[in-house]
Amino acid sequence: MQRYNQIFSAFRTAAVVTLFAGATTLSLQAESSASAATQSLFSYAQPAAVDSPAFLASVATAEAPLGAPDNSSLNYSSSAGAAETASAEGMSFGGDAAPQPPPRHYGRRPVYSDSWRNADGSNKYTFYVGAGFTAPTGGTANYLTPSYSIQVGAGRNFNRKFGLMTEFDWDNFGIQGSTLNKQYSLYNSLGAGLPSLDGYNHMWSFSLDPTYTFWQNEKHGAYVIGGVGFYHKITTFTTPTLAGYCSPFYGCFSYQANQPIDSYTSNAPGLNVGLGYTYKPSRFGSAKFYAEARYVYTFNSPRAYDVSGTTSYFNAFPQNSAQTSYIPVKFGIRF
Image (cartoon, rainbow, N blue to C red; front, side):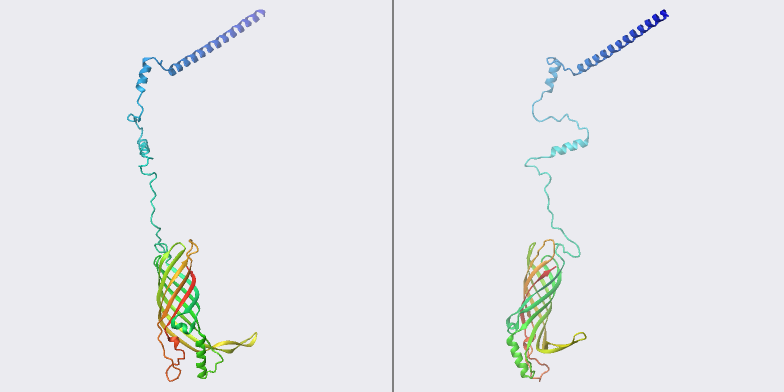
């Protein structure tokens, strides 16, 4: 047994010595490989000696005079790279070269082509309504007085300057007090027995009126207008009278009203000419306010005065068939 223990101890000692020797050998081999690699790396990175003939020859070859680089030895790897380089070299930032980017070119005004606007952007159609006053002139002022006026019209604009309007006008007038007194005496002399006399006159007309806008900016404009038309003139004399009215709810009652006793009409062609001013409150809309004054003249055919009853007509007021002139002044809005 003792001999067996001695043999096992000798075997263990030999194994330990063998393992230590193998580990030492591997460590020495690794250090040798690392040293060889380090020497190889430094052998490539270490430059030649500055005083060696090879180093001096390389420096002499690399020296070149300062100035523009020599691109003759460059070789572009692709046609795309060459194109980009040429494009970059072509850009110039000097004062004599063309500016980059190219200058902006401004075109003409927009051209419209729809059913509501002309080529210059103006509205093809115009609608307007206005009201104001009218004043008789010349011989008409001898028997009529100023009163109110109403106007409605529509038309076609061919461009920003020229248009053609169709218009309806109602021009109302009063009758001079001296004229009413004369008529009152005349009617009573013929046996009318009137307690008093009143009356009114008006003219309604349809006309065709070309317009020309001679000045215009974003907000303001001025135009001339004139045309020809048909004019219907009416004068009516009235007297106050009592009238009655019966209602199933309130019964019958009487009131005072003006009863027509004599009336005259006259139809005639006429012409008008005037000036107008427009104001556009918003540049984004088409509505415009306008103020306008015209001179109107109608070519009535005079009829003779005759109250004798011996002719086919009774004419106690020949002024109604006389030629008429007046100035209507109107304010309104255009679309």
